[in-house]
Image 1 (spheres, helix red, strand yellow):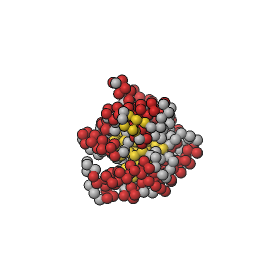
Image 2 (tube, one colour):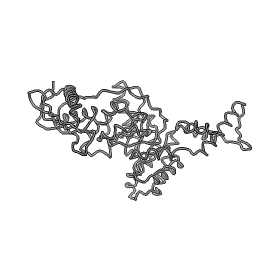
Image 3 (spheres, rainbow, N blue to C red):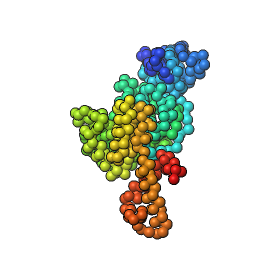
Image 4 (tube, rainbow, N blue to C red):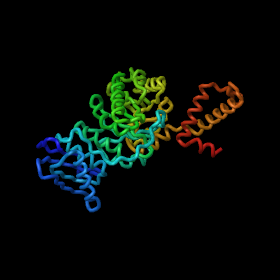
Length: 407
């Protein structure tokens, strides 16, 4: 049975000629009379009946039996339709403890802790139009963002949209990350997000061990409750002077941590300095983060490059970032993905040298030798280890087979 009827009108979503892949929903509860649906849609001639049927199903899932539902559809997909209807219903005070989940795609394979994370494409959590084709741009990861890109009044709507996207959107080979809100609001995000088995949770404004352990504990509790056994990793974002000073402690705070990353906009604001393309004002923080991450056995991931139109500046930043020890960075536009991948790829000269060292290492091992030599030079173990890592990374990027074919 439905919850007690309120007189509050609930609305969610967007409409208008410039809106696409979204919809606006308005719901007015009634005491009787069943459900009345008023539908306007750009694609009504093709999908109008399907939208009506889905609306009825969502209302049934939420236990709503009476009310007036007005839908203005701008080409939304079912996962977005369900999220907007549920948001509008809950904004009336109804169905607070219920969920209307879309049909779920098969879960992708679990994400390895040390997987390639060169590029992470940010997608605003309340903008479904950006989700649909995000995987086609081939980022290593997508970040479904619930924090800075979402207005405070739309946090509830974004949470449901991201939850549904995790279930119903195919992001292809991209790792599925979610940036939650700052605590304590982020804990409410976890309640909706974790049951859908994201690969990784980003913790914004991380400054203390306690923040990480609180998120870790809540994830563990939800996984136990929902019988989830696949790994869910954590990536704390250091965005303040205090966060940077506590970098190593934060890195060691949870076995779920797979990487540390930095948010330079908030960090420079905390310092009271201007963020520049050269980055000299953040050099200390970035070096300290890399050192802390590596000391804890984690990857170091750099911030975003904020000028989406400056590809030369992006490539230069990425190359400097890689030289400092970062393994990837965030991106705010799909066109940045390819440039970032190029910037973080080892050069042909580096690969060729590493392959020779690895070949010499394999030969020495076959002969039972404890010393690796290349020509007249002795190769120290750290150099061999670095070469092995570079070759493995290049192989993951698809670069080693090409190089070997060119020989």
